[in-house]
Length: 392
Ligand SMILES: Cc1ncc(COP(=O)(O)O)c(C=O)c1O
Image 1 (cartoon, rainbow, N blue to C red):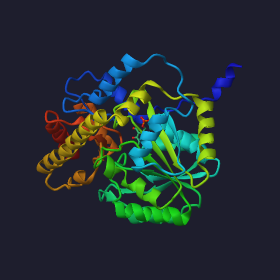
Image 2 (tube, helix red, strand yellow; image 1 turned 180 degrees about the vertical axis):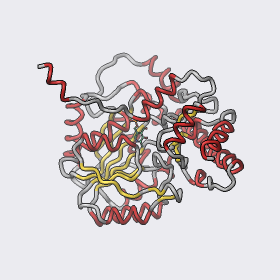
Image 3 (cartoon, helix red, strand yellow; image 1 turned 60 degrees about the vertical axis):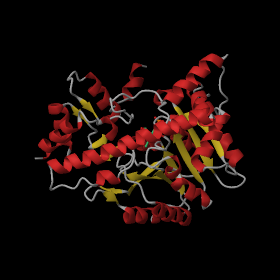
Image 4 (tube, rainbow, N blue to C red; image 1 turned 60 degrees about the horizontal axis):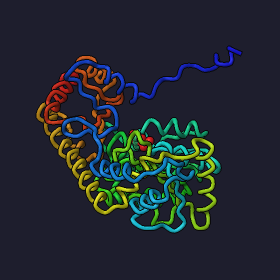
């Protein structure tokens, strides 16, 4: 029987997690980690939201058991998420709590597989989208999204690809703060995308991992709301990893607007998928998230802190673009301003990225994506100088 396991070849590790662990082992005191999608403050620490700390203090005083949550998770969290994303109660909504945004994407993919076999992913997209939909049994099709040379959205090509899409296919859309490019469609462009989805009978599946990181909670939800207003059936995978800093607590929500009369049946399938894979979602982080979202004081403290994080990232973008421009005047870095959220591309080749890592201890993904929050006033000039050197 030993040969049973001989069929398993060795799969490569997730590129972002393996780079990040490489960076953690790097003993150079001046190393700079711009890889992982974890927000860092000006002292380059990740930390815990004050509102979450306060909610946790209250929870520790009050909690009297560690019973299972229901299979679908904490009702209050789902309800608060519905309000956060759509701004109001939605008729015919089906939702369950999930294991982070990844869990919401996977349950959503498994759910949609019953009626669809092709998924359209923007090129580029978060690398794990490929894995999630492949493991769920989908055929992956890539559609044009971002032109790295022009530093802009390939909007016409994106629309043209969607126009050709097979009916009833799934289309993954980043609700805001596209990872990795940081480039989002305008609201008018979103409306055109919605019309194509409607015409081609496509199922939009929004990945919403950075709500509040782009232009604020309200503005960042506009794309999804505009699709919902048109009455399109859609799914949303919400992650609270970044905007509530609950990364390791694994808190997310899957929301679906399947169309009038279908919500209960669709939810029953979500519950069956959850029961068959992990049974019950995490309790501790769900109670914290629900507490912050539903308590007016904690919520307002949270929004203030989130606003501060966003403003810090916007300030860093401005300073970084300016510093790069001063050191390399012939190159265009203004696009960094137009990006939203935590990520942007630097137009670097793989060997230039490797040199930054090996020579300078500066870590970014092999594709040249940086986490802007990993910069601060002390390390920015080192990063700019090192980039100038590898480019020359
Ligand atoms: C675009 C995107 N979607 C989903 C996720 C998954 O988030 P979570 O950690 O909540 O599973 C991430 C995390 O990096 C992400 O960048």
